[in-house]
Image (cartoon, rainbow, N blue to C red; front, top):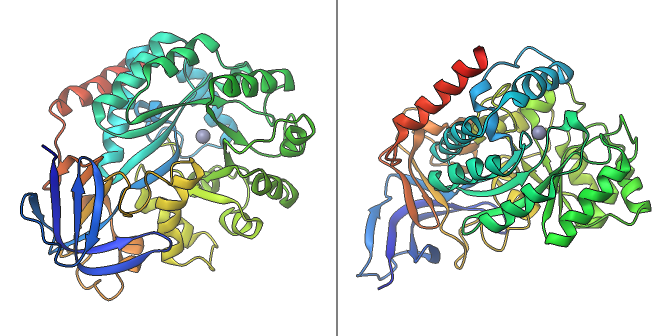
Length: 415
Ligand SMILES: [Zn+2]
């Protein structure tokens, strides 16, 4: 028996090829996938969710986040990038035990789902071996989220990724979890480290996720990769604020994607805003939340920062597309997620249209969601057709134990 779920008569915002509003529209889901979107679908044998007072939209795709930093929330708001690296990665990250990765990853993933992020790229750069892989993957699986799990060492070590740990991740990851290699990269590590990582990723058929910028090791890291024959499309570069336009052009030509994290990039003074420059260069660009040590963990805040931080030519629809379909494309997953196109995974959310901060917004629902909504408006979240949040509450059976785990990590780190 196939499982069918019908979202009846919602205000549907789809994002493909560009954000568009469909009023009083049904979404039919079968065995975890969207099979039809339209008015008055004739369906008799499905479980029905009344969406008549709801805004239905695809789940957000967070293309860059360090989930393990949850137990250090808010601790690096007033510091620059260098102090953040010393404090968060050096002082605390180096002390993390597998159980600390487990508790932060679980609560961080639940925080994502609560806020409508149904896919997260977890850049797990505090990984010290196989037990850490198990801790991170167990947590991601238990949460119910879809994830690209990037396994890598602390950038302070300047070392290549441990092949045994990465191979273990490849063996373990399945279903909604895709493994990736979280490299230190050509801007921050000697080139023998870069070559080892790039070759390891290629040998395992994995995508690389990597922070990028101009210096301190290479001023033009993309030109260096090109010269060494290592430019490839299966890479997600992050930030890049200090890169010259010639480097952005190389990213575009290589077919790789970019993740920008405007809240963190601005607060940590990584350089000027990137969205406009990346669009001009033709680079596929997704949004990332990055670090709850410094910024809020929800996509609404990040979308609003794009509107606020000097990207005047970006419309609300442009920003929503970056938070969904373009983020999916940057991760190479746009054939599976990022919009409500039939055939795709049923990763989506329902917002209460009559909440105090959303009522009156039916004239321009896209503008309203991007400028006014917050995680508290989200009534229902689905990942692969599975309901993970309903009536405004996560369905996680052991939420209390998950929160207690983070408290224990905070206590451990304080001693
Ligand atoms: Zn990062």
